[in-house]
Figure (cartoon, rainbow, N blue to C red):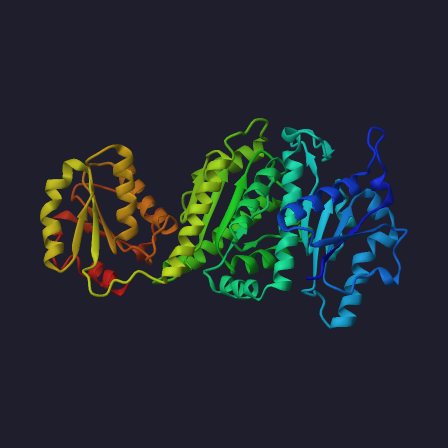
Length: 496
């Protein structure tokens, strides 16, 4: 099998050795990348180095290749380098008739921070990897250099590993018919994962999440070009959200890049559009589990030096219960977030593979949620429901709190409908059960919307307008509970 070509394009100045080193930055990067690839796959790659002094008509590759420009201030000072990719794209289009050929993979590697107006449309359309760090407080930029120290080198090597994985996947697509079939199957699955952009302080955390998702072969969509006005961003983000069933949003100290024509940051815009998309999708009648859209909003527990504006945004985000329906809002360590996301996504994939839960041939079930002291009071209602052909499961009150909670979530996932009995003047308790019912749709429930009824004691008052839309929730007075009372609820139950 022929070796795959890797073309590294860079400014000669970026490979000038430092006073205490024998090799330059680019040579060190190239050596480490090939060393890792060889460990992973053997000697299957050949690397070509191209500086501004080597560019000529013969330098544009015609065979399949991975092209890695080392983007830096020096790179953009050279017209030959800064114009290379656009000329190459035109050359490919002339030869193949296609603007983006499947025979080439592009990875823009940023050695240091570059002025945004230097970035061409070509660079913004393709994968980017950043080999520098930015202090969220001082905005000080530090280049990432190879150091012979495992502790200091973790971030550097993780980025090398990310690039190696992209190269390996590209090679497999070119050489493996099985891989092509797997990709077709993946396209038929319930959708991808939209990974939202973040502020400077969470770039590393985001890359860790991205790395974990890619490692598990999930389809990731993200906003590539940040240099757009709001209308263009709106169009691109919504286009990608339509191809996803989950979005992940990380919120930290830095608010993210500001979009001036709207006065909002990228982080805020993506969250806002995902919220609107979630409501649009999930409010459709008889929506199936595999068609639902779930948001995961992670708020960093570490919020020192947070600005007043960002603090207000975070607090409003946590309090805005209308817009966080069908969302998981988490303040947990980043390592726990990775496990949570993986479990959430794998659950959706498993549900897709099973296609659906078969309910034909069995009685539909109703999960009857009540407080322990109301259990005996609710028993006659349970018998009424069973007399109509339904299987009734009451709240469990035995065992440790964690066991009770796990059983509660399991019942929400498996039942066909839910009834909540409100009889103790505890509105917060009722609201928490309603929110659990909504969250079940993103925590493994493989059925559609869960019809829910609240039986309200005749003397109680409760306002649930903010927590459920009226077409999904029914209010029943305890004094009027009868077979006739339940008819609308039964109708919804049978139609799901």
